[in-house]
Length: 483
Image (cartoon, rainbow, N blue to C red; front, side, top):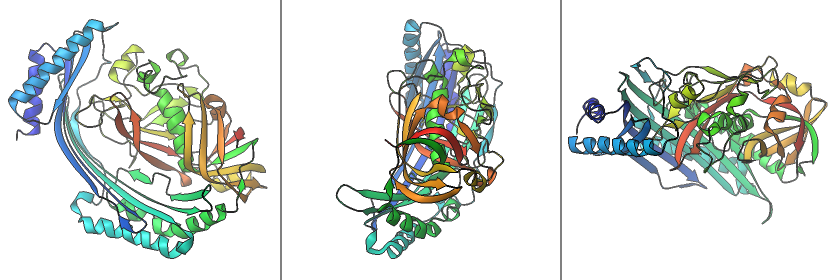
């Protein structure tokens, strides 16, 4: 088989001969492995690998893209020609010609930090780890627990990128994730579940060592106690109150009400037919009071071990930290070279594709809320009357990302600075900017974590992306809960 450097050079050379104003080529090898155990049974193990080349060309101001997993000169030349043909067709209907924000050629390599490459370990070792967790749930919960699940996933991505501007980048990214959940049924209408570390586990740019670091086994007694407690918990009251959110719930809040609205292709309407637009329109840049003065949120693909971490995006833009919201004001967007040029900005390096067979889109990186000064305990102690909610359970948000309603697995009433009565099916709702402007405290770095989302969907045809949200627990006033 033709090696990746030769294949990429062949494709790039043919794009230039076809009249490309710009072209880039990605050669990628992807390995995936997912293992789960449910109620003591090992589920079918998912293992997948793919290797291919994606060719993107800008010609006459229009984009074209084609891909293949056949590494012959004939196939690569045919796909380059197809990409050029699509670009010409696109240019014929474009309202405005595409321009790209300037970029110095990138030459370098990146290896995500890890200790143990999970793909070097025998499958039995990974299954045994999960089986031990499953047995611990069964022995701790006994007959009270009537559903239990443990899972782990591993990904290795080897990418080689070249462009007609002289960029040449190699990257190897290893990601690992795991989680568990247990459930208890009260009646045919009532069922309760507790999950750890979140409802979708925790995924990071790490190796197999993450599974031990998560300390999942140590959490099982608490989870069994809490799911038992939910059987007799009171319903969430319908009221307006002070709301304290756990870190994993804050991760979802950031993802849905900050990350997606600030994707600049979405702002420009590219997602209108599929997943909507954004209330944070380009004319509000530098003006919109998105959040309270204590809020600063960044895009940071350089964050250590974040699931949205990398060395370069899929346009060869080096990873960098960029402020999106500074002291509550909207100051930037997640952008590509094309969308950034429309606002006379530099790309924030947020273009990524779901494998070699897809065009890159603007995707979230690690969208991180800077921690505050007070500890979680001090913030809780300062709440005389409120509610604490923990662990994602449900979410709904409108097409403009303006109004939302989220639900959690469990909550507690807060009285006199302490968690008191547990509540079941807690929910809260609001308007995005009102909600964020009512944030009065973010906990300090001692409770900070970059939470990983392994399944963010976007685009037509649909693509999956892996993102991170760095946050500590946070407190908001005047929030509508229940109902």
